[in-house]
Length: 476
Image (cartoon, rainbow, N blue to C red; front, side, top):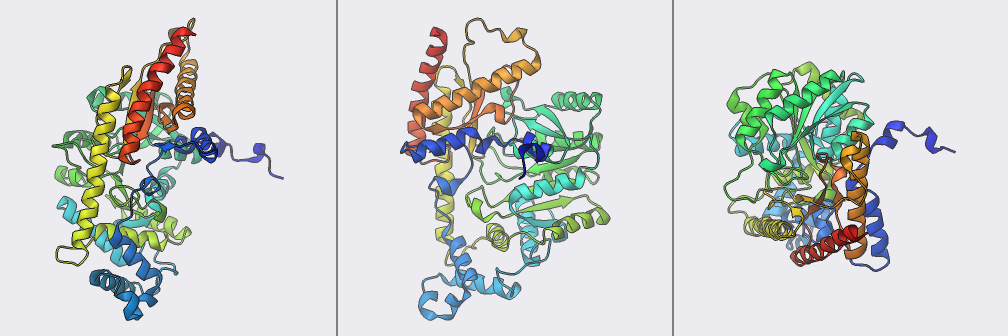
């Protein structure tokens, strides 16, 4: 029998906070009949967001093409959905049950290139686009490609999405933290990047790449053009590749802000030396098709012999799942003006994004009005990273602790807070220590995906809970 001592030590050290112990406890409480407001993970359709009609109609026809052979059932579908399904089957006659090319179905890769050209006004090479099982598999593929020595490291934002820290641990690489600037809407700071890289050098780490999440997870920040330019110049100066996690590019709510891709800014700068890996996914935006595990990875500034290794890596896993590839295609090639499905598609899209914008404002304004809580109205993505203040227990002085002792102390504090919040109110959020945070601060990440009435209730429950929790510490 395999014992825990036999298990890969790297796996045992890896952590993925958004589905950790607090979520397991939430599921236990739900099983006992307690209402839980799940704010721990960006899983829109699990939180009552409806799938887009056109996407599911086309998928239905592709999974069971016989529907199109019968005039009765076929009449239940819009003409453009039927026409789109037939076109897909012509280009991919083996259907959804057969392997595809390792890089993905060719016409879908071309559609993604067209999408990028329309989005950014720049050309994209379909032969540098890989279809992946969600963005996560694309990220892991890049880590596999670039991790060559035990001291190879990756600069990742703090706070970060724990896919990055967990994958670094699993692959035996080194984590190089750079802190986002909370006082400046969570933008990147050039001096902080230099500090982080220099500290890594002093620790014998060979930093090979920098990861950037835009719009931000868990921060909800949207990066400015100048911030992106700064990162690209920094990467060029220090010979780093860039991993641009852009899965929330449709989720921008703040007036006057706009998503800018790294590919677009690289093109404007005429940058030809920095290798760029850009990730997108069907799980976020307004689709919320997390379960279909679709996404793509676009690569720029990579020699043919290196790209051949990426294709080899993809071929080891044969190909990404076909339904995920098809949903990715429908994301980048939606109904056009004049199509039978266009009006409904645009109505559903606007309703989802409008609802998210409204809930972001309810959450941001409500929580920032609570004494001892600090957050902005999220500019984008699906999250807020909320800082909260707690008094220290009598007789406890964090200034006398070592950095390791203080990290453990603060991680225990935010974890205990979030667990008690769950037990008392049914609100399930993730401790900030699961994403990383500046020493001396406490945070939690919450989504604003639940229905509007749940977000409103969350704010009221949080206000009462936080005041009560602080009072108990003071009186202990």
